[in-house]
Structure formats: structure tokens, C-alpha cells
Amino acid sequence: MSSNRTERVSLHLKECASAFINGESNRRSMITVTDVQVSSDLKRATVRISVFPDDQEDAALDFLKRKRSELRAYIKERVNMKIIPHIEVEIDRGERHRQQIDRLLEE
Image (tube, rainbow, N blue to C red):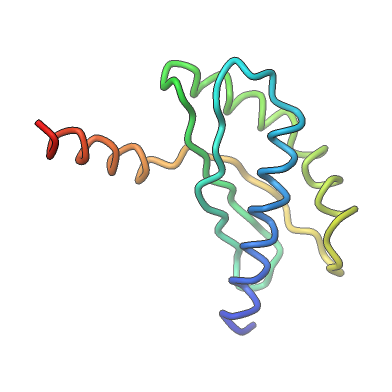
């Protein structure tokens, strides 16, 4: 697979995941899709999220893990692909570290 195709699929999945989360979330926290990593064979995708406030991370992650099959169905309706990737969801620790570094630099 070309990396260009993988990048395009990743971007499209990120847009779909963002729209799905926006429609399904309960608005108790702000969930942002920061990145989607797609395997080279396009069979697996990892959706990385950040959550505000931080104390809602576990609840948001549990919510999205329960909704994975619905997210996959949502993607299937909107993406023209033979194989819809298996979706995993995880907290984007890199984003949290970046925010912490920004706070430290401001001090």
C-alpha cells in the first residue's frame, strides 16, 4: 500500500469519527479526535482522542469502546472501501504531554 493512500484513508476516518462522536456524545465532556493510525493493510485503525476535562477520560473511553461497532457501521455508510477497518480507541497521551509542556513553558 502506498503511504499516500493510507494517509487519505486515515484523514477520511478521522473526519467520520469526529462527526460520529459529535452526534453521539452526551456533551458532559469535549472529545476531540486527534489522530487516526491505519495499518498498512487497512484492516485496523486506531482512533486517538483527547478529552476535556481530564477527569472524564475514563468515561469517554468506555463510551467510545462500547460504540465501536456503531462507529464502524457509520464509517461503512460513508466510506467507499472494500474492507472497513477494525476500530480501536485510545487516549492520545502525546497530546496530553504536549499540553503539559506548553503549561510549563508559560510558567
